[in-house]
Image (cartoon, rainbow, N blue to C red; front, side):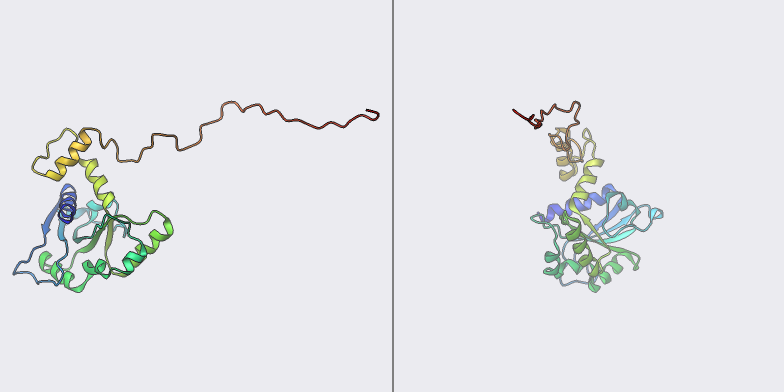
Length: 214
């Protein structure tokens, strides 16, 4: 699964016009104790740079310049605050040794860090708490895996040919045969109450005063 995660993240950045280098033990670069699942990405059009939010959306990606990206998807669960507190490895991408490695790869310190995770909590409060803890780890940005998949699907042409890439070709076929119709969640039932055209007549019995003598 980890190899597939890396392949998907790599091709996500390539579809967004980034040069991508997969980390490997090269004699010219410092060795790190935990190489993890690292990618070094650089945009082909750095003139598009601008500040983006901590939690990345798909539309933010073209405005990044360089980044060292670590993939910790862990698809079995959402990233709640308790998970972050119990897994210091999540701050690995922001560590001094990874920073030193990235400086050697890019040639200078002009880059950010990105951690790829599965999903954040759905509720606003727990989500904010998780993001706060991740920000405290000095990570530059967070991106969720559904954001990556949704952007890739939106870029793929259902009638295109992506045969050189098994992952893109698989996604294309799912889209081609309508297993994936739209990126928005759709329900086969109404999510709102139907409008009331005619109010139903309601019979209300009223109690009348009995006349004297009855």
